[in-house]
Image (cartoon, rainbow, N blue to C red; front, side, top):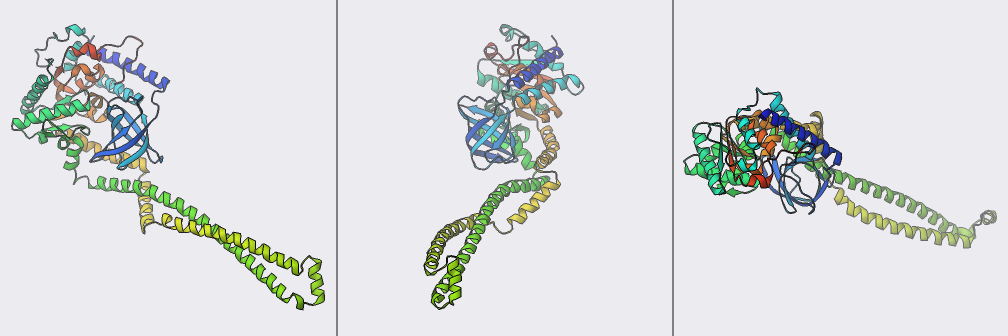
Length: 485
């Protein structure tokens, strides 16, 4: 079948998979613990969490993060899972240490975006290039035993087959040098972020040896997992780091807005806690006022009784008879004194407890001078912009044009195929050449989505013996959903 037929087939499989995932409700929340901030680059934050042993999250799976205090949620993607440890890239910081969060995976959304990209390739043929994709489609449909023998002596499609990973990766790096000197724009993909880091290190080292400044030509999309690879500092090649540095001066307004937004997110829960403490303090003070009022009333009554007792013998006869008629005599008045004293003693004990609570709550409810005014000002500013969700959208909207322009200015863009297929930024950027590292380990639908972005040539690399073992190119049987990568 042609590339168009193959893409249509995968669209049908993905839509069936989307329905299956929705019906089975597989995007169940996952409680992650012991979160810590690994690094922050520009507007992105890399966090490490621990998940239960039964949880397996795929690479580049989008997730929503709900903090334990149920504050504003943030979005992120899973970069890697090693045992119980996962690395998640977030767009909002959660602090240096995070005791617990709830991860809400969006497997349905990931499948949906992949299907949408393939649909867009067919619906807008003038924006995508299916010439080189036709040769790739032919390879993907061949039996595993014939993959290594697929004719590749072509300027449009070529293969680098070898069981020696170092050899084939070095060959891709040398080819990258040649293509850069020929002024070609290159998309380099690897199946996972760790392999992508390794490949970027090899390419960077080769460029340095060839006299090229690798920092100028290559960018690593998403945050690198490793700090170095092949003697190359990957943090300097990170897309976010390069873009943030390049646009630092021109992004003053966005940085100011983001600073205000982050500051509001910082002080809002702090003041909410202070206000709760202040409410407790007000209730205790009201209780204290009621106790003092009651105590004063008893003290007045006690003073009246004692005065009456002191003057009882000197009172007129008729007045004493009138008092005795209502049960007031010397003995009963003494009993009143004992009763009032007991009540005052109890009130004094309650007052001591209330005063101790006030002394404890007063510093806890204290707010630094000017913080409430700052919060109200920030809240008013964010409300005028449409709320916190709208502010995040504004920050992203201001960022997208610059991200696209910056990516188009780089000769080599290294990424994972899932990010290429699902990130809207790649739908607006085109390349001359696609270099595929470890191709047998990449799903066919992802290879097709990446191939549609190149105009001239596809170079596919890997060990052909892994094709059958990985099973990523096998066409799903009718009625069977596509495997979500």
